[in-house]
Length: 202
Image (cartoon, rainbow, N blue to C red):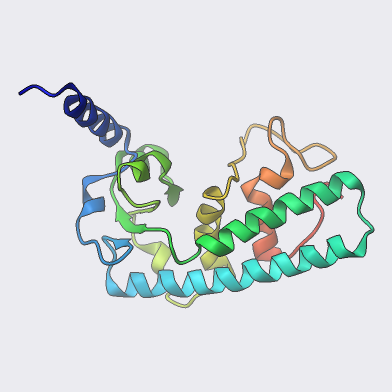
C-alpha cells in the first residue's frame, strides 16, 4: 500500500541528511545521551557541563545582585532580567541534552564549525548538540578549563534562545547589533562566562 505520509516523512528525512542537519553516524554508538563518543570524550563532556553549571549559577547570582541594587534604569533592568531567564534555562538544561562528539555531517563540512545546536535534526530524534569531527582537538588538553567549556556553554545557550552574531555587523553604543539586542546575543553570554559580568555598551 502506498502511504503518502510515510513517503513524505522519508523525503523530509533525506532532505535533512543532505543538508547536514544530522548524520547517520548520529544513530550509531549511542550511550545514554551521548552519540559516537569515546569514554574519555563522555567524561570530558560531563566535566565541562559541571563547570558550566557552576559558572552559570555564579553569573545568575552576580546579575541578581546588580538587579537588587536598584541602580539600573528600567531598560537595563528588563534586559538583565531577560539574561537571568536565559541563564536559568541553561541551568535547567545542563546535563540533559543529547550530544554527538564526532560528527562528519555535511553541515560540519560546509561551515567548518566546531559545534552547532541541531534544532531541526533533534526534531527527528538526532542529538541536540553536535560537535564536528576534525582532529579531536576539542577534547585536548583533557583538563577542563573555563575556556575549554565555553563552546559547550555557547551551544546550550542557543537552546535557550540566544542567536549568533552576523560578523558583518558592528555593535552600537548600547551594545546592540542590527536586529540583535545584546541580551539575545550568544557572544555576550560567552564573554561573561569567560571574563566576568559587565554591562554591554558601557
